[in-house]
Structures are given as C-alpha cells and as structure tokens.
Amino acid sequence: MIELKSQIQKIKLVTVLGAGAWGSALADLVKLNGYQVRLWSRRSELTLPKALEDTEIVVSAISMKGVQDVVSVVQSCPIAPQTILVTATKGLDPQTNTTPSQIWQNAFPHHPVVVLSGPNLSKEIQMQLPAATVVSSINHDAATVVQLVFSSHRFRVYTNPDPVGVELGGTLKNVIAIAAGVCDGLQLGTNAKAALVTRGLTEMVRIGTVLGAKTETFYGLSGLGDLLATCNSPLSRNYQVGYQLALGKTLDQIMTNLPGTAEGVNTCQVLMQIAQQQNISIPITEQVYRLLQGEVTPKQGLDELMLRDIKPEYHH
Ligand SMILES: NC(=O)C1=CN([C@@H]2O[C@H](COP(=O)(O)OP(=O)(O)OC[C@H]3O[C@@H](n4cnc5c(N)ncnc54)[C@H](O)[C@@H]3O)[C@@H](O)[C@H]2O)C=CC1
Ligand SMILES: O=C(CO)COP(=O)(O)O
Picture 1: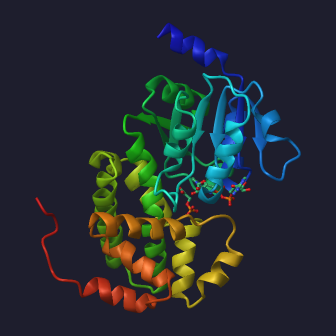
Picture 2: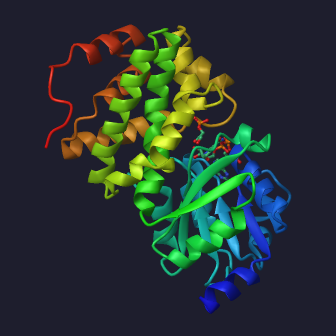
C-alpha cells in the first residue's frame, strides 16, 4: 500500500501517442488533473524518443492499423522498466487476431500493461460532459495508478479484474454499432433496435468468452455500456457507417468522408476469421460482414437475420 502511494506520487509526466480524436481527449483529461502531458503524433515535430523521455505513463490511442508499427518504434526507444503502458485502442490485428494490449505486452513483457475502455464518445468528453470508463490489468497496482491519474469530477474511472473482457467489450461492440446504424437508417423501429442490441450482446459474450473474457464483464460499462453509447449515437463513426450504408451510400464514399476511424469495419473481418476457425455462431456480425463486402443489401441482410431457424433464447 505504501509502495503504491509512492508510485502514484511519482507520476508527473504522461505521454499520449496518437493525436486523433481519442488521444487528444485523453491528453486533455490528464492535463486537467494537473499532470504534464506530451501528445505525440507521427505528424508532430516532437520525435517519439523525445516524447518518451522520462515519462512515467505511456497512453496509446493509435488506431489499430498503426499499433504494431508504433510499438516497434517504441521498442527501439529507451523507456524506464517501471513505465506503465496504457492502451485505449479498440480493434483486433488482422494478421495475428491479437488485441492491442497483447501486442504491447508481447513487445514489453516486463512492463505493466493497462487497458482503458468504456462508453467514451470523444466529442462528448471534449465538451466536458460527464462520463465513466474502466481500466484493467493483470497488474492491479498499475490499474489503480491509471485510475487515479484519469479520475476527475467529470470522468469516473472504475477498475476491473478482467483485462481481456474490458478490451474486447470496446472492440466487439463496434460491429454491432454498424448494425445498429443500419437498423436506424432503415427506420426499423425501437423494437427491432432493442432486439438487435440485445442479441448483439449475446454474440459479444459468445465470441468474447471463447477469446478468454469473463461473461459478467460484458454486462458492465466496457461491454453493455459502450454498446448502448455507440448504438444510440450519431457521434459514433461505426454507427455512421451502418446508417449511411442504409441510406444507399457506398462504403468507399462513407470512409472517405468519415471523421476519424471506424474500427468495426476491420474488426468484422477478423471476427469472421475467428468464428470460422472456431465454429462460433455470430449471425449479426456475419450479415454486417456480407454488407460491407457488398454481398447483400441492408434489406437482404435484415431478411437473412429474421428468417433464421427459430430457437431458444439461451442454450444451457
Ligand atoms: N474517438 C472516440 O470516441 C474513441 C476512439 N477510441 C479508439 O481509439 C482509437 C483511435 O481512435 P480515434 O482517435 O477516434 O481515431 P483517429 O483516426 O482520430 O486517430 C488515430 C490516430 O492514430 C494515428 N495513427 C494511425 N496509424 C498510425 C501509424 N502507422 N503510425 C503512427 N500513428 C498512426 C493517427 O495519426 C491518429 O493520430 C481507435 O481504436 C478507436 O476505436 C476509443 C474510445 C473513444
Ligand atoms: O468507442 C467509442 C465510444 O466508446 C467511439 O465509437 P466510434 O469509434 O464508433 O466513434
């Protein structure tokens, strides 16, 4: 306990990697709590080694496609052995099917790695609206340090003992958010949306538990919480992808004009690979995949879901 207290008191400098929507919002949260913050992006004048010099916490908000590259460069920089690595990316690596925290941990086996994930639409956070999130790590002390560094009267941070589940909640919901956007774009109504989001959660639990997550984590902020936020907000880029597909735009048109990253598009492909390899039923994800591939229209995807064999709600 004394050691943890002195660890927390030592934190003065936090480096945030990725100056996109989420990295900028996270940097502001930490800055408002009185810490010195360095915000690095590949376009900034600050070099990565300089950004990492003497830092106590590194927060990565790099989109999935850049994580491996950035991790490789960070590996070549001198960082102190006790530096805490925090990952806030919500995606899966298409080559290895691994999560961002697994990539960080593989590269830095002796460093504490903490995941940060929750219902956190960056625009609302930047507007200083209240929000809550979850931090989790196999190193509980490191998670507690990160909890204290980020917590404020408008950002409530919980710890959770299931890092795999916390990270996967934020990642898996992106695909369901695309489906929710389609549902609203087609004006299918509130009953349909409730059914979709609930069955989406069942699907998240099914694939997430195969990947090592605990079921109950998906019923918390990083699972259901994030699912509700993104499936119900036009601020969500993943929701926007589905919504605009339902209005008849092409995926290329949507992606060209989208502000920032919609991770669900790539995550969907990775989930299909995993589901096929491991024989997991993920019907909503499958229809989102087929829609993104241009194999079905939004209306055909809906019909495919509605006309599946009837069955019990749960298998025991
Ligand atoms: N925007 C939001 O509301 C939230 C986003 N997230 C997650 O955070 C991650 C980033 O999202 P956003 O900030 O919204 O996206 P963004 O597109 O605004 O920013 C992505 C950042 O990653 C950097 N990046 C990408 N490839 C790179 C590479 N090869 N080398 C160096 N830097 C590279 C970009 O330069 C940019 O700074 C995503 O995984 C997203 O799911 C999580 C919670 C909230
Ligand atoms: O993860 C998010 C909110 O928690 C952000 O959602 P989008 O990436 O769909 O904008």
